[in-house]
Amino acid sequence: MTTFRFPPRATRGAMLGFSTGQLGCVFAGAVCGIMALNLATAGRPLPALGVFVAGLGLGVLGLARLRGRRITAWVPIVAGALLQRVMGQHRYRGAAFAPRREELDLPGPAAGYRWLTATTADGVTEVGLLVHRVEGTVTAALRCYGAGFTLADTGEQQQRLAAWSDVINVLGGEYAQAGLVRWALLTRTVPDSDDTALRYLAGHATDTGSAAYRSLAALTAAAAPAAQRHEIYLTVVLDRRRLAAEVKDSGGTDTALAVVVLERLAGIEAAVREADIGTGGWLSPRVYAGVLRSQFDPDMLAHTITDDGTPAGAAPQAAGPAATEQVGWSYLRHDSGLSQTLWIYEMPRQPVPMSWLTGLFARTVGRVAVTLVAEPVPPQLAALATRRDKVAAAGERATKARLQLVRTAREDAEEAAVHQIDAEQAAGHVRYRYALLVTVTAATLEQLQRHARVARQILSRAGCECIVLYGEQDQAFAAGALPLARGLKPRSGVWA
Image 1 (cartoon, rainbow, N blue to C red):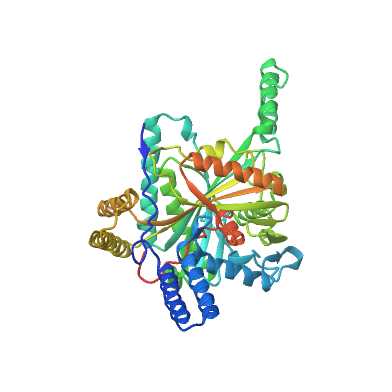
Image 2 (image 1 turned 90 degrees about the vertical axis):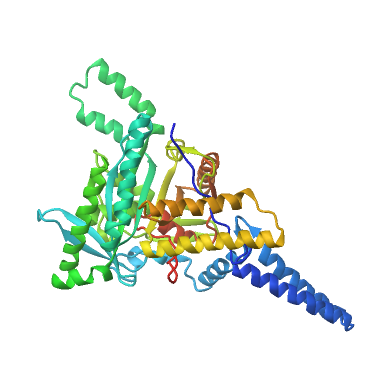
């Protein structure tokens, strides 16, 4: 059986595994310790005690970890969350209270989109494009269909993975040069509460009076409470600045922008189909809005799905929520649901089979959205990043050898991963920045806690390490539950 091994998450910092913030806190704590000693020597015990406690606090701040993160990493998160609450921005009111009724109103970091309808060459089919006014991007979503991967034999699974690998390289190579900046693969699993299978059976059966039909109907009805529906969307984000020359040559209008974007989308869909992945076309404005709206309002999901499993859609202007609110630090309330988003910050370190994430879709009973957001790194920057990582790994090894410090097996694995990535880039593979997010949605807080606990258990058994994105649930929901391809920290400077 073919297995995969993910590289460990890099723990290297500015020096000996410590980040700049940690080193600064430890240095400041050491300075406070020296000052406390001087004050005590000068016969001032109370100020000395105060300075010593401050230095001890700085040392703890720099070295301790809380809920999977360094405390220094929590400082901007906590400060931002508190500022958000002080300014009243932890609550959002849309629908009738929306500030811009003519545009798409989404809360928090997802704000700033407007609809642009593009019509394909047949003059009938419409494609919904989301144009971000500030970021200068154009977003579109392609509906895809699975093909029973877990039931296929090993040879067919390997063939499909090889084909998908080709798609990833095409997206990160050819289309990255043509303006693609990010893509995301969102898979959502929802209970089939609308009895879609029963309705499909009743609508397509030719002889409803036969014993075979009655037996099949009984089996379908018995399985209905545990039935689930899976939907897959490939979201791509294009940079308007990279398309500016072609758009200008075509007239410089929104219509010209739509024509240029549709050309890219047609090529991307063709590449996906060549990998034997079924597609249902790029989402129209109504269908795209229906997907967004049903994520905010799970109760309306049954009413946005037709008999053949295709979303019926919603008015584009009504794609946003009526209201959202952050509940505490770890939940987001939105219309008829509550959600919690997990970040998988460590992939399995043991060899895993090709279907290692299947349990998250097969053994959950609630609404789950799994999103992989990926950003291709330009070849030049990828080469610089790899060279930087190799130099840093060599420098850390030399420093520990000089100080006679013990190296751990994880550090050896991280160094081996750097060399593996270098070899893969030399072989022509595209380097990506990526994040894997899991959003669990339920109707009540008790159900959400139970379903989120089950999801964490499944991820733990698969070898993943995940954390709840405390204080960032509004941003996490936009990245993990909505087909918008968000959630990656902007690349800083010239580094990957």
